[in-house]
Amino acid sequence: MTDQSLHDTATAKPAVERPVFQISRLSKIYQRNRFTALSDVNLTLRKGEFASVIGSSGCGKSTLLKIMAGLMPPSSGRVVLDGRPVMGPREDIGMMFQQATLLPWKTALENIVLPIEIREGKAAARRYRDRAQDLLDLVGLARAADVYPSELSGGMAQRVSICRMLISDPSVLLLDEPFSALDELTRDFMNMELQRICMERRATAFLVTHSIPEAVILSDKIYVMQSNPGHVAEVIDIDLPRPRTLEMINTAKFGAIVGHIRGKLEKEAKA
Amino acid sequence: MSTQAKMQTRAASADGFQDDGADTVWIEQDPFIDRIPRWVAMLGLFVAIVGLWQVVTALDIVSPIVLPSPAETWADILFVGNNLLTGGHMLDALITTSLTVLYGFAIAVALGFSLGVLVGETKFGERAVMPYLVAIDTMPKVAFAPLFIAWLGFGISSKVALAAFIATFPVVVSTAAGLYAVSENERFLFKSMGASRLQTLVRLKLPIGLPYFFTGLKIASVGVMAGAITGEFLGGGEGFGALIRISASQLNTPRVFSLIIYLSFLGLALYLTVVWLQARLIFWNKTDKIGGIA
Ligand SMILES: Nc1ncnc2c1ncn2[C@@H]1O[C@H](COP(=O)(O)OP(=O)(O)O)[C@@H](O)[C@H]1O
Ligand SMILES: [Mg+2]
Image (cartoon, rainbow over all chains, first blue to last red; front, top):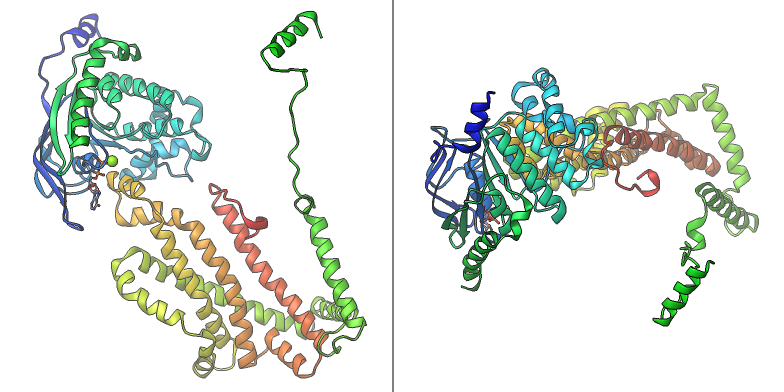
């Protein structure tokens, strides 16, 4: 990489990147209990963008993410990723859940190459071992390759699941409250790690959270969701400079944004 | 204590605190019954039981035909043991019963596993097959013994069939329960990786369900013994069950006792093999086991 191109990515980031994920008129009615979980959701994710969706629990965040990931079909509406409609699970989508969901009978490294093993078989998975080790280095778990999940702390297990998500080099990361089961200190640290990883890879990320500061510190754009039925009530652009640091939490601007979102969510809670 | 430390102590006590420098370590004492080591506890219980047994028989509280003395029983245990070790007719009987138990267990595991996967993995199995299985399971299965004898004769097959019949159901239920034990996140994980149904079954659901499966195997290992011996009681033949029935009809109670004891070794061997296999296979699940064996 030349000095010039380094300079380019740092400052001359194009104002509008191409859309990666496009969701229009999306609604979801669970047939089992005829419950309308989502109604008329529209959103566009652009290349390299970090977007968050925030809302009280039960407002349909996970439902939205599962539909985007192709894990369940919408009742109506359109989901398009990279020009192709999402009609089922896709290799170019990486997912992370609230629980690390590691298989206890596999080592950290074996867990990381699991998506390769499932898609391309054991031989391919063996070829990806070096890459898996690189990813472990990336998240600071260089020496955990042969450790079983029962010996990992919650934060370490989530880092392994980050590696598992990254092994197939997805173009979009869908994250469903990935760190909400962790203690606050670990969580702050993991959020900064996540930012670093996304910036390094210029990944497009979509994060579900119910922590307002977490959404603000990480995102370029925040979708505030309200329930009954689940819909996007407001879209907020966050123009804090990158890379974000934890110190920014103490700035007046940060406080103002957090206050605004809290007001929006509280209004719903009272209503 | 240095002067400075003394001053600190005095300063602290002025605030109402006292520090005489001693640690406040205290020992948590288990009650006596929880502190007896295993071998002492086991041996002690054994001695107590045999002692009580000895007293009851020595005082002629019960007739020796009902309950022989420990010494008499021990002599017979040695006699039967000698017969077994020297390859007498009792060894043939033990081999016959062991084979019955092993065949019955193998059939129960294979059949129970297959039906369990059908029930746990397909809606058809859950909706259509399971109700029939439950209906059959609630029947007194021993009552089928005459049928098996009528169908399969007085040889080993009818006993194997009864043993397998009794032991199959716990394997079905535990296998199906194991397949249900997978969490929603785990299913979504495999779905997001594009796993096929077979891959999800083999790489996720079966391993997750292994502990349940083994619980079923343990119940089956007990059931298969009961089935084999019941079959031999009712259908004759050359096994240990027939020996017990003959001894009992001759009022040879010590022989009945010693045969039962050797039989329990057979059951124990099967049970412990299952436990050992479980510990080997499910190395990641270190839940506390009762006494390390259940
Ligand atoms: N499989 C389902 N069947 C019926 N209702 C569901 C199902 N999954 C979720 N819901 C309902 O849809 C709503 C949104 O759920 P979810 O998307 O999980 O919310 P969130 O992730 O924001 O907490 C909730 O009220 C929940 O009860
Ligand atoms: Mg959720």
